[in-house]
Length: 518
Image (cartoon, rainbow, N blue to C red; front, top):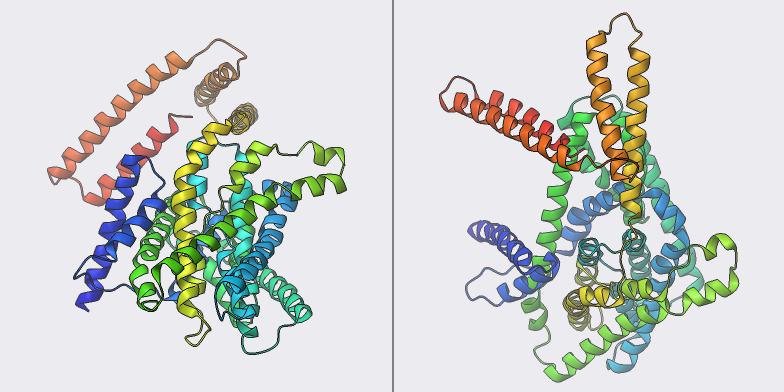
């Protein structure tokens, strides 16, 4: 029990320290966390931390998949479905084949089925580090959407292929049987996800307790993943489907209080889960090396480097050849308008980093699996190479290629704010004629929204800039809010109000403060 407590405290402290260090050196936190975990693994006296595959696949994976799908842009996924499918299915299978061929040739005694299992393990990408860099450097949103869409689907493709390869060890492999199983497994996962999403939506429509709603949202990924796995379907695709379904229905089934609470909870949860996973990845190296003590180090390093280069090279080749083949076959004007230049494709090609799903799949191999220790080592090496080498050089590549956002997201946000203000003014005008409304209230609301309309028009270049006046107003209001906050804290400190009352009023002041940016 003492070791468990020490391990938990050590992991949480490591997450805090390494995340702060990542921010200080301006490096995406997954890279620093993996390197930090790697260093921690060799600290004398630290209790061993062995990553259980089921812990990742059952505990960590469903909420991360659900969260990514819930906040995904469904219209963008639909618009780029062909590109995403080519990466999530076509590139995953191409990577699996390329790695299998090379691994079978360079690793003595590695059977074909085991080689294909290795290929399936290292095929899926992890978008956390890449999207963190892309957003920080204002890469076009479409590139980020494609990265996230790819990562939502390629885990399902890779894990289904992985399962087929593992089952083929010691038996016969049939491409037809594997293809049929792939389709049935994927279809079953989507259907289970839709059913789970429908049930959860029906339940949440009848609940108005933010804490209960948020708890249900935390369990929603499991509600799709676990039944699908029990039925022999793709739990990954089931969790993703639940997330997409509920994310689309969320405005109709979630209350304002739940949205405020849920967003904060999910933001913290996804950070902690990702951070813990990347530290745990780094900590696995000592266990991996124990099983390879009889292998020459030079041979291991050479094989690891070769497999890593095959993984990155396959992605580079795919993204710089397949688009031209597609263009030759599909010359519709609608598709020509969506074509991406070679610079954004290079950024996408260099963003194929690997993460926890790959390592968990490798660790989940049966104990008697051929060359199991070597496969785990090669998987760890690919993760380390793609995260560190590609992650550290990606910002320089983005700057060198001058890949920047065209401001489309900012224009969309401004248009949405103006539409909301117009709708508010129209509704105020309608309500002003009702018997229960007061004229002074309607005038006060009309004046506030008219000012907001003028400010938004100025931001869009349609009028005189009001930013100086707005900043002065926000500064004054924040000073007044801070005075109120100090007053209620003083009352709490004097014992005149309870801590609960203070927090309730403080939350209202915080919400008022945040609304000033609008």
